[in-house]
Length: 176
Image (tube, rainbow, N blue to C red; front, side, top):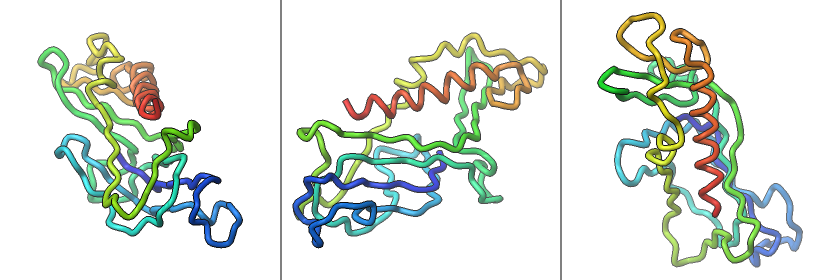
């Protein structure tokens, strides 16, 4: 996946806002791009920064197409490869969208204090794949690879939209 930006939005109840006013300048913005391989391991460090102590009510991810010509994600915001019933497949999408984990319940806000040294976000790719029946995908151009993308090379454009929406749904579920 390629993220253009990741933003942590501070809560109005955050106790350490220095000037007594809450505004967008109190948010933490991490400028990417961040290319993340969800299959690389259990923990993938994105950045090592100091985040001010406080209460954060939202984490926002801005998907965007990779501009790195040396990356296999070039021109794509996400890519997934695997097999469907023994046939290789590749899913990719090029959407540009903001997706947020919004903790409106004060009891579930992200609280950063001197005792926390990292923030982890657990993205369950198996749950995403469990939401969609990939067995309906076809190799429409008979090249030996099932392509699922918005460019419809194999006739799987609708499935590409379903997968994109399932990923967005999984991110939405993370706030529960």
